[in-house]
Length: 256
Image (cartoon, rainbow, N blue to C red; front, side, top):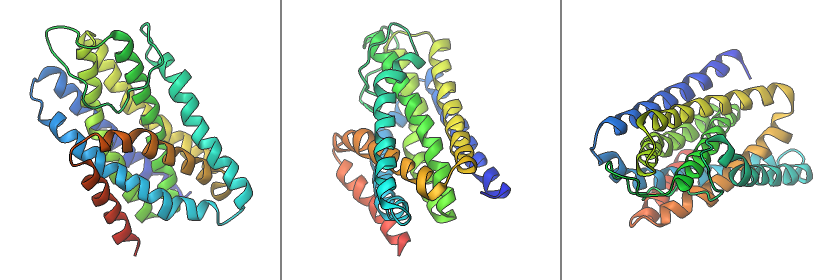
């Protein structure tokens, strides 16, 4: 990866992280729920883009080199997210957290007067979101390594489902009875984990084969995040299917 491309990735991720944190901070000090109303639609479009990119760009390139080893590394990527969701996420934002992962349940209520969800649900949900942000940064760095078009597409998809995430974390904190300071900490960690994920992706490219190892792992991560996290949340939304189809159409149109 060239130095110029290296900085492009970091700048893209930094911008997304800063806007995510900014929107989360706004939610903590404002009661306007406009962003929450738009969140399901944005997530559904983003999930359509990510799911399509996985099959149009990531998978074909992953299996172009060594198909047998690629299959193993794709599986490794899937298992990596599963283990992280189940066992690592509750440890990242610990406050007597359980292990239920509700990171992309965007219908959590948030009442500013009292806790409307349990502290266990709040903390485990925020922990899962942090894990997802880590993998978002990793996916962006892998996308730019494939090419500028893929990098821009995956960045756009990440933007669509990540920008509301800061607001979701803030809302979860408030709904769980956390203080504004603790909720803001969770919002800031979302941006930080995204940056860390991009740095991990950039470092991995310089240490091992991109096509034979890094890309298949990224493909596994992408397929699990899109199918396991984003798509179920999108289908719970009234117009979620249309959003997914719209996102997929964007990728298919640009790929041809």
